[in-house]
Image 1 (cartoon, rainbow, N blue to C red):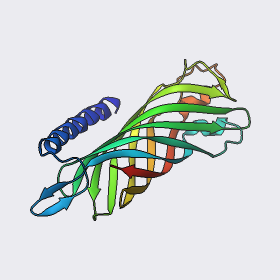
Image 2: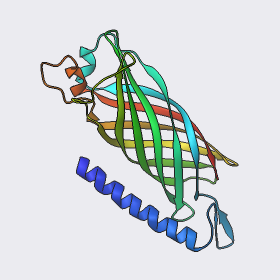
Image 3: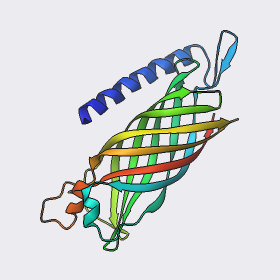
Image 4: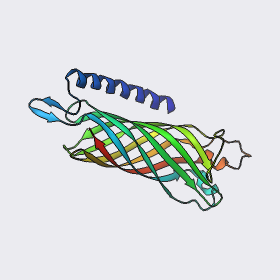
Amino acid sequence: MKKLTLLLICTLFFAAAQAQERVLNRGVINHNEEAGLDRDNSGFGVKGGVLFSSLQGDGKDMLDNLKSSTNWHAGFYSQFSLGRVFSIQPEALYSRREVRADDANRRFDYIDVPVLAVVNFTDNLSFHVGPQVGIMLTAKEDDREIDKEGLNTFDYGAAAGLEAKLFIFRLGGRYYRSFSDLGKFDAANANRALNDIKAGNFQIYLGVGF
């Protein structure tokens, strides 16, 4: 699954590069003109919002009184048109995820890179879907930084959601599901519950495009 995900990401990045070259060669960044009609599904911008963490897997039963958590994410995006309906949107996001339980609160900070295929239903509404990879930057337990040994610092999965555009603003909602376990501890480690937990989150964000 990991190799397939990485192959798909490489393919999408190649398509995005080809689309970018096409746009720049025509001397247009934020819109194209084709058959007398304007397109505004190319450009770049900043985005950020809230992130509602969720956990899946048998390891949840080993955590004492698991609680939901709310955090944040923020970053940049670029969108490259492949026509009036389709485009490719790579992003670079700083995301904060958290596992809260009675025994400890564990916080993980990531750089996430989704590469999304965008389908425009209308000029103002689009569907986004595609793979995402992430690198864990820091791990903390009860606000104390901990060693990342035993944690899966490479995360990969898939994301999907809807986005609405109004002038230069974008408002969207997206769900991400990880395909990798949070941990890879040995059986005697107190954190072994993380070996059978996969992270997920629901994001609500606001973006500004240029």
